[in-house]
Structures are given as C-alpha cells and as structure tokens.
Length: 367
Length: 273
Ligand SMILES: Nc1ncnc2c1ncn2[C@@H]1O[C@H](COP(=O)(O)OP(=O)(O)OP(=O)(O)O)[C@@H](O)[C@H]1O
Ligand SMILES: [Mg+2]
Image (tube, rainbow over all chains, first blue to last red; front, top):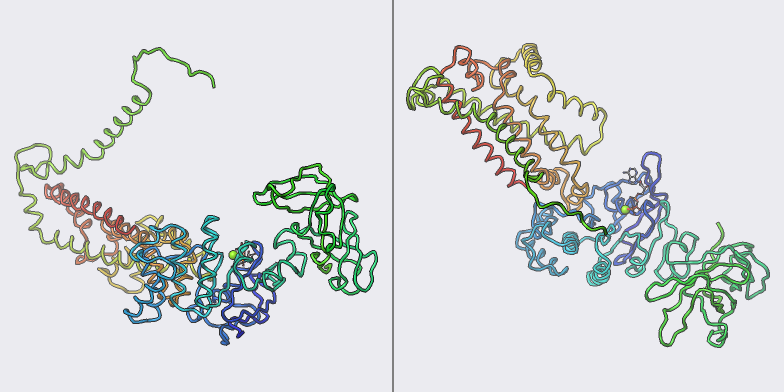
C-alpha cells in the first residue's frame, strides 16, 4: 500500500507546551485511519498539521509523496470536515458545495454536474436551494461532507464530525461514512474520542496520548492486544491488575495479581525476564457459572479457574455487569449476557465459579 | 398541596396588572407628547403665513418655495450628502478591514491600537475639531471637502470597527479555515466568506457613520471652507441671524427625510440578516 500521508518526527509547540511530540505516522492510500484519544491529547492539532492550519515546530509533513510542510492550506490536496461544519450561512447548499470548485475555476457546467453528483452521493438531492439554517443537524453534516468530497481530495480529514448528532443518527452516519470511504477509495483521517466509533469504522486506529501515538494497529489488535496501560484502559473496559511472578516454566508463568488471585499466563505473552507486569482482563472474557453447575464452565479449554462472590449487579440492557470478589479478595468487573429463558440469572450475594482462558489475558509491560 | 386560598368576589379596584398597565401607557403618552409636540408645532408653523412663529395667520407653501429656491441651502444639502456618503464608504472600508486585522492577526501594539481607535468615540468634538485644524495647518493642507471628509471618517470609522469586532467575536473561526481549506486565498476568504458573514454589522456601522456625518456640526465647522459648507453649518448660520420661517420648512423636510431614512435603514437591516 502506497503511503498517502507521512508525518516524520513532527513536534508542535505552543509557547512552552508541546501539543504534539515527535510523532511519526504513515497513512496508506485508501486507508481509514482514526486518531483516538481523550480530550486535549492533540488529535485536532495533528489534523491541523495535515490540513496546513498549523506548521510543525519540528519535522515534515508529506502528502501523496510531496513535502507540503511549508504549503498553506489552500495549496494542499486535502479537505476537511469541521466539527462545527462551518457551512457558509450566506450561500445555498449548492453554492456551499460548489465553493471549492469555484476556487479551482472549474467550468460552470462541469461544476454544476459535480455538485449534483456530490449531493446525490450524500443523499441530499433536492435541497440545493436551501440555506444552511434551514437544514437539520444531520443534513448540515452531509452538506459539509459533500462540500469536501466534491473537490476530490487525496485525503479527507474529519474532526469529530459526528459529535453533534444524536446516538441513532450517529450510528447511521458511521456506517454511511465507512461505505462512502470504501466506494470512493479516498484516504480518511478521522478524529474521535469515542472508542466505539473508532472500533466500528477504522482500518487502523492510532491511540493518541499526551501528544504521542501510544499504539497504532487494527481495531482487533488495539482491543485484544493493547500495548500500554493507557491503551488497555482507554479502549473498552478492562480490569487492570498488577502481576508478580510466582513460578515459571517453559510453557507458562504463574503470577499473583492485585488482591491475591493467582493466574496462569502463557510464557510467550510474558515480557522476557520481567518479574512484574500489568495484566488487562476484559470483563466479557470471564466465563461465569453457578457453583452448583460446574459442568457449564468450559473447563477443558480454560486454564484459570476460580471462585467468587457477586458483590454488585448492574443492569446494562443487553448485558449485566457484575462486580465479583474472589476468595482472596481480588475485585473484578465482569460482563455476562442478560437473563433469558435459557440463561442463568445472577444476583448480588451469589457464589459463582469463573473460568478464564489464559490466552485471553493481555500482558502489558510495566512502565 | 394546600387548597388555594379563596378571595371575596368583590372588585373595587382594577387588578394590579391593570393599574400598572394604565400607569405605563400614561407614562408612554407623556414621553411621546414631550418628544413629538415640538416637532408637530414646528411642522404646523412651517405652513404659517406669519413671519412670527407665535401667531397663526393662514396657510401657505411660501416658505417651502423659498427653501427650494435658496441655492446656497440646496448646495449645502448636496455637500452634506456627498460628504456623508464618501465618509461612510471610507469608514466602512477602514473599520471593516481594521477590525479584521485586529481580530485575526497578533502583532506588537495591537492592544494599544485598539485603545487608540476608541478614543475619537469619546473625545469631545470641539477638541477633535481643533486638533484636526492644527494638523491640517501644520501639514499645509487647505480646508474644504477633503479636510471635512477626513474629519468625519476620524470619528465615524471607530463605530464601524467596534460593531464589526463584536460580530467577529461571535464568528466561528472555522469559517475562514473552511474557505482556505476549499482553496480560497486569504484575500478570497475575507471577501467571499468573512465579509458576507459580517454584513449585518457592516450595515449597522454604515448607518451609524452616515447619521453621524449627516448632522455633524462642530468638526465640520473647524475643517470646512465656504464651498464645502454642509447643511448644519448653513442652518446654524441662518439661525444665528434670527429665526426664519424658512427654517421651519427646512426642518419639516429634514424630518420627513429622517423618517424615510429610519424606515430605509430598518429595511436594510432586515435584508442583511
Ligand atoms: N493555538 C493553541 N495555542 C496554545 N495551545 C493550544 C493551541 N491549540 C491547541 N493547544 C493545546 O494543545 C493541546 C491539544 O489540543 P487539541 O485541540 O489538539 O486536542 P484534542 O485532542 O483535539 O482535544 P479535544 O478532543 O478536546 O478536541 C491542548 O492541551 C490545547 O490546550
Ligand atoms: Mg479536537
């Protein structure tokens, strides 16, 4: 895959504060890359460096193989969808969408055809003559998208474009954006602080933390193999447990975690030579069953078996979240499918047995 | 919930709301009478045959005829219009561009400049007039149209600037970035996107500048030549000599024009929204 966006050792300093610290990043042509991180971590700044609204203090920015570090935004082959949409209030929908073509001096007839095509692409036909204030939030979002896409950018930058929409519309737009991206084959760099959104849409996710890229990988890798404590904690839910080595042989490492629970971890997952590390345990990976019914547990495959008492039950719709405490006192959060006619029903105070496959434990090197 | 207390079904006084209502409308009537009675009297007397304002002798259009035949007065009205239009255009240009530069770019002395710009708004006009006179004398510039227009722009462009700045503060910074992102140069972004977004403020500022220039007396007094004398200057000169029924007629015309202007500016403001 050819590289479309290439940041090389980019640092952006505001006064004495480094908003972006020595970031190197390659985005492939036609890739959907998401910058995911908490508020203030530098996502917008990274995007603005690509768009040309900020110049890096150190480092270079390349787009499509061309060094654009010193090029102003209006000379870069990228377009952006702004969080506030920034539609021009005095222009109609068609004029808004046609603005970029007008700047490029595209002939009127061709321009009109492309505007119509772009509006059709985002299912907005028939609204050409409206003004932005006569549109709903979702429609404005589509106009902003059409306005950027009509210029046929090499890279489309999207800064939390869905954050102003309600949950339902947001889901619909996530799927639509993904579909559009596949259909057009344009490179998307998408910024969000919503991990679910990132997992749904992205080819790859870059976890941004304090101006650095903490981990870069597919949704699958990020979720199942978080590389750092921050990544494990930020994406999805995880029980983060300090682990200390008790015993080890060629195949396995026996560790004791926070609270005294003992677990077995595959040798390969454990950082070589380390005596301490962090274990991230996803709540849905713990298989919970009644003590009276131990056969229900897939004991054959699971290496870790332990008993616990349910301390709290939190109803979450499709799932139940349970807070369980093991005999030694390790407190864990686990998720079970919600009660159904077939399923088991758990209540606070119940004693349960838990099974956990050793391969489902993620070991993060201690910092 | 406790039961609502019941009152005897006796009504001797209007309810509180009606008393307040009555008081407010009386107050409004008094204020309006106070404001408009002189104007009504003035308009009425502009049709009075008598040279004296106090006695009514009969109806006439004579004073209007005199006004419309008085070429110095017409000349002055024309001067006023030219000066008001030109100084308004210059004020809009200076005020809008100035507000944008102050808003958009950080540069040394921006804060000082901001304060300096506001000074002419609060400075007594007589001081402005004198200082402009001294300035023009120092640089050897003759008095007349140019001097008057410079004077008017000096005190009216800050009003445009302040109005535009207020609007800029509420403007989404992404608006300019979106234009740049779509390929507009900074100049195109300013002209094609920012200026239209600022239109209501620009219109309000322009109306302000026009009004200020149109009835300005003191600064004009210090900077005008005989050829560029404005209507207020002429009227002031006439009034000094003695009250003349022509002034009543002139004022009536002025009032009519003002009312028309108010309606026109209201229309403009609605249009620009
Ligand atoms: N122009 C600026 N001047 C000074 N500091 C800035 C500037 N722009 C951003 N910062 C700082 O840089 C850091 C990163 O900002 P950025 O806008 O990139 O965060 P973000 O990840 O997009 O956050 P959010 O999710 O809240 O939008 C923040 O601490 C912010 O205060
Ligand atoms: Mg941001």
